[in-house]
Image (cartoon, rainbow, N blue to C red; front, side, top):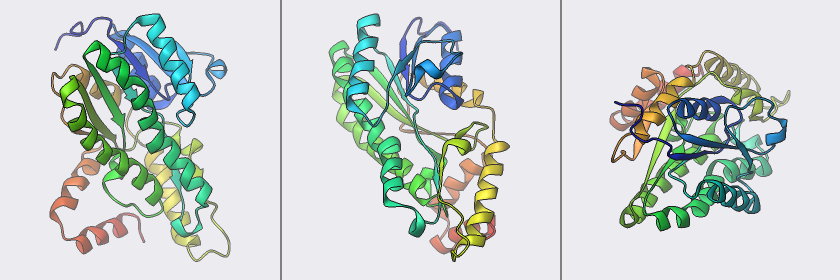
Length: 273
């Protein structure tokens, strides 16, 4: 496929100062797109190949300000990549309510707020594509990642509904669910502490170590960047895409065909629980 199919389309990527968002932005810019990223603290980012706008997905005023600034500069917005997100781990029983709300504010309510901010502009220009970065974890309730799974799964389902609501406006929407990629997400995620007197101490401690190892040995984020590029070049994107290790993608298919208890035993064995 030719790389100049969509010359100078304008793309906005939330959470683009590092990791997957940064990789997507750099890749698309190299392909000729006009890329804008966002960060909660863009002044702290010393190296960025594309402009970073100040935006916190949990704060409406920063969302409106960033979107309006982009429209003032470029006059249109062709693609939104909802990438900003946070990790959260811990036994659900021991995870503070405040941290659960924070995770949903960023991973679920945040992307919806950004979508609401860009839709009037996309509807006015008669076109647009919104790509929500979710997670393969959003397809299954993973032990000690239940809140993360729930927040990403909620966005997957909401996107399905949104797609149908937007059909009449020539605005497309899709989910892209990555598996484990080598990024700094583990360092930034909320970890419920491994408490000495917790009944979950041993199981949670072992699972936490395993999760961090998966991220450290994850795929190159460039794989995600290439997948996003291909989706943008697809005339009618599907509702769901999965990107990552074959086994991780295969696990979603297994859940559809295996009895619940069999699938549960498979996860327990994988996490050594």
